[in-house]
Amino acid sequence: LTLPAVPPLVGLGVVVVDAWLGYGRFMILANRMARAAVRLFPPRDIPFFHGLAIAVMPSWCAIQVAVYLLLAWTLDLPLRTLFGERFDWTLIPRGILLGVAEASFSMVLATVALRVLAPLRQAQRGGDAALEYQTLGQSGWMRSYLYVFARLPLPLALLVVMLPLLGEELIFRATAIPLLLPLGVVPAVALSTLMFAAVQVLWLPSWYQAIGPVCGALVMGVCNGLLFAHEGNLLPLLIAHVVFLGMLIDPARFRDA
Amino acid sequence: MSEIPIPSRDLPLDVRLVLVLLGLSPAMLASWMQTRFPRPLARLPIDAYSLVLLVLAVASYLALGQPPRWLADSWSPAAAILVGVAAGAVSIAVDMAATRLGRRRPRRAPPRRPTAPVPADVPVGDAVVWRLRDHGPAWRRGLGNLLTPAVLEELLYRQALLALLVPTLGLAAAAALSIAAFGLVHVYYGAPAVISKWIVGTLYTAVVLFGGGLLAAVVAHCLLNTAAYAAASPRARSMLRERLRERQA
Image 1 (cartoon, rainbow over the protein chains, first blue to last red):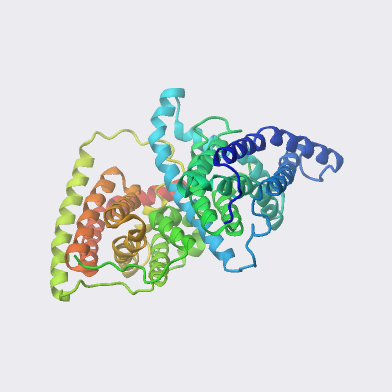
Image 2: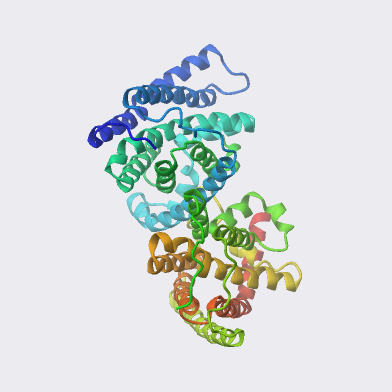
């Protein structure tokens, strides 16, 4: 992985601003773009808000790709080698297995965290914390992914879901890791993972519903961060991210969606 | 101290990560598979947990480039089996003591919902119910649900996972992590079982590293599983019936 000639603190600032804008202003901009697109081309047989949730994904991805191109041009971030210098088909099964392993371990981590934190939630809010998690466990931003899987055929749904995940990989791996690597591999991976975990909390009903996504982000942030620092190839990480999400989205909730 | 199979070649980081992460969470993956694909899995002679362990053990040893090392240097099979029987007796005593301690606590009314939902809404407890399912011939119950997991867990937690972790973490931390993972695999049986398996895992790891090698640990684990199944089968059958009634309802 070639490192850009940027001081580490400046790099950290760029990453923080990139994530802050990406999940703030740019998310609002993506919503406006999606709303305009859905009004311009109203989808048939899909409710307006489901179409809006689906259209937000390519909109946000387009903004993130534009931001990354700008950063790559100004800060000399990897661009041509982002998906490897040449195509290696073995990266596809390796990415799939990585996604399965990350999802499996993050479920263990989330189960333990939910058990440990359930008494705290019950003391805070009363009622049954487990029932609350079952009801609201895949709400907030996760519901958008449910709409995609519920309304689109599977290949198209996977393609659409891949777009925002590409945006996340661009922010937290392709931008963050090279800019933070001058601090060392461990601080770079730790900082990018912390930011990745922090943004999972946004757009969710409460901290208790964020436990699952945060545990997933901790596992994925460490593994994908380490792999990008060592190999500098985004392809297996993107595949792993899609598989991870596909495993954790519950098909039983499609009916509700 | 007997040797553990150290990787003979450098593994790519992603391969090492996949094997370690799956080694730390095979029961969760099995539970997820059981929830999503119950029909194809029901046709297999072994349960989902054993299937995951089998694939993982084979993949680990292929990646390590070495076959399992069953016997420590200068140990005869008879001596290893003898050590295994002794370790098995100790582990049965530990397990019984942990179960008794767990039962002493006053029982609360069972919750109406699973107490620990997981992100994928995997029904907690499915894995154990399926592992101890009481349909099918006796050989399938015994071989598929008792002895296969015992052998595969020993292959994984006492050798393969250690060998994958030692180059990065060192022997002590690798052993601690693999013992912790071995205990957490039994979380479906409750907290006393996890604590008991941590003690038993430490004993088996010591047996593998200082004593009769993997064969002794396998013998001990098979004895423990057989004793636990013999003691727990009526309760497991009632659990299964209850679960099936819930599903039918």
